[in-house]
Length: 317
Ligand SMILES: NC(=O)c1ccc[n+]([C@@H]2O[C@H](COP(=O)([O-])OP(=O)(O)OC[C@H]3O[C@@H](n4cnc5c(N)ncnc54)[C@H](OP(=O)(O)O)[C@@H]3O)[C@@H](O)[C@H]2O)c1
Image 1 (cartoon, protein in one colour):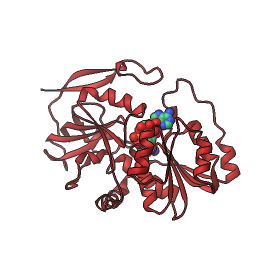
Image 2 (cartoon, rainbow, N blue to C red):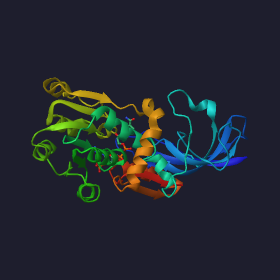
Image 3 (cartoon, rainbow, N blue to C red):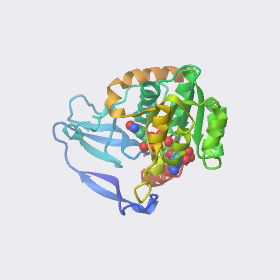
Image 4 (cartoon, rainbow, N blue to C red):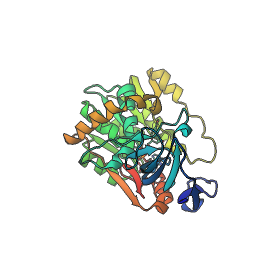
């Protein structure tokens, strides 16, 4: 009988999640049945639902012991995965290809869900064209940092919005963003207007709320908006007051679309191959914020909400 640890929510969050809202539990795993495999976690993606695991034992066709696999199985250090359990809206376990000299943890970042979201949200929805101006919020995070760099590759002027001067410097000095704005110390509406005097053609929105309203006020007619996330509202205790995006959408004839990554997942190989090429050519940089130790997963999650991560936040189990 194999023992495993899992992290569960001990107390319903009140506002921002706290480390004390979680606890570690031990569970006993059953012997494998046909169609199942025992997976041992190597990295946890701080999202908080994905993991990168090594298959220890398998009775599941197509998955062999020793291979690495990405799946959506909670915060556990070991788990028995039943292929039939993966459901229609949850992606099936993804076998990790050999990325050569690149770290396998990129399967949770550039070559995983955040990378695919950035790639398809930008190219399918923002539809960037050379010479256009694109704004991305959450710009120093896993999705945002990739979006901004691809938009630069596509010939756009890129303005990033992030929550510290250190992130602003990283975006401009390391990642080549044209402009970057610290939303905690700036009037975002005025700062975007100053950085984009002719207006914004495309906006990739990772944060929602008042910050996004300030960007929408600067959009050019027929601008495109990719709605990706609204992290500024995730920890609000009451339902947010309705915003008035309709005014901007109507006045500027904006096109807004939610990026549903799972419906584009079937095209991921194209995205990962092109991004791997850009990484090897030095055009696309990745950064990981790595927290060591399974039991530190709640700290990493709380830190993500506070903006402590640069690039992709992962836990090395
Ligand atoms: N549509 C999809 O399929 C899909 C897929 C993946 C992710 N998402 C969404 O995309 C967004 C980015 O995800 P990610 O995994 O790349 O996370 P991330 O950007 O790496 O990390 C979250 C970042 O959000 C920022 N943040 C936290 N509170 C904020 C606030 N009140 N206002 C503005 N920024 C705030 C923090 O950076 P600062 O220091 O800049 O505040 C933090 O580092 C999230 O909203 C996520 O839910 C959607």
